[in-house]
Length: 422
Ligand SMILES: *Cc1c(COP(=O)(O)O)cnc(C)c1O
Image 1 (tube, rainbow, N blue to C red):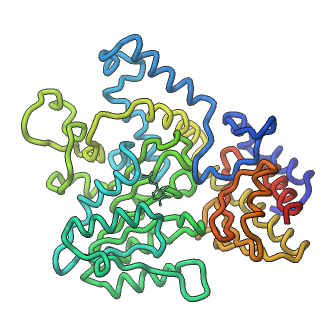
Image 2: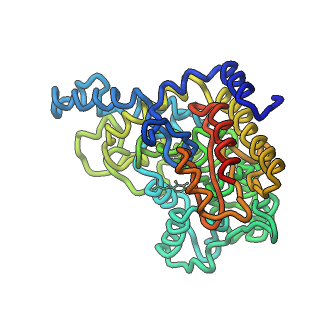
Image 3: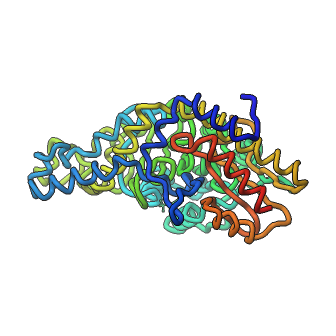
């Protein structure tokens, strides 16, 4: 796409955008009387206008049926989560039996590690990225301690090289090989939440398997952002939250992926609950856990239907569009943001350093910028002008032009406000 930093260009690009109508399906927050420019869909996705209807449906059925709603509701609660399964499978490139929507993200990471981090004195190390999202760091440390190991010895972090912001895939692989048969698990954020870097999940998974380790991915910033092929990449497990790119309400439900080679293994160690038990015999309430031969076996409790309803409202849009079409727009739209930032940097002779990789195989829609020489004042000016971006001290701006509801005009307007603020 040949870009121009003009409103005419932005409007033209929007009118040619086949996804342009989806913007109308979302509520944009207002500051005063004006709709803000929203670039934090990587933190909390916007509310689809259909969400209320989906949740109200369940509230109405609860009022009408009480407990009978488990079977008599329009969308019976007993099997509500199943409405999400095929759509989720298509979203992440999985077979339906490899995914389930359940619990929340960190809870799921723990439940998955119960099954897939089984250390012994010889093989106990975990490789993760340096400065992983704090919840992931705490989850890993506590798992290591739970098994009686010392996090300082067991957790091996891979950092960017001196003077670089991005962790090189080859450095992750070198570390995997260095740990060799001491390595039990690789668990990395597939998209780094800070820089927006995307790891080569297929290559790293393969390298982990070659030394006999298992490989899992936290896809909090990957699901709904990237085209994923978890089954074909032979990923052992993955989990993601529903409330970032997937717009499924604050703290909304999470998805998990477990490769078919593992879901078929009934002897796998797991923490069990009645919702993971064989559906036919669940209500016999008998002794002896008999896991469902799908990712559903990791479900503990009956599904939180209101959260699932919010998830369904949003997933229907993803399913209608497909990740390939969203990805095509990401390349154009995030590419435009990058272009606008570079133009402004040059024009004003300021140093706005984009730390997100430029190569499309190494990034999603997020763009992270270091505003050299500027502090929080810049962020405050942007906020005052009605722009919602994410600020990290001392001077990093993270923003995600989301292909589902952001426009080229949003990006153009952001550039104008940024220019004025600088
Ligand atoms: C957002 C995010 C989380 C949040 O975890 P919750 O359990 O949903 O609160 C965890 N890990 C990563 C990498 C994230 O980006």
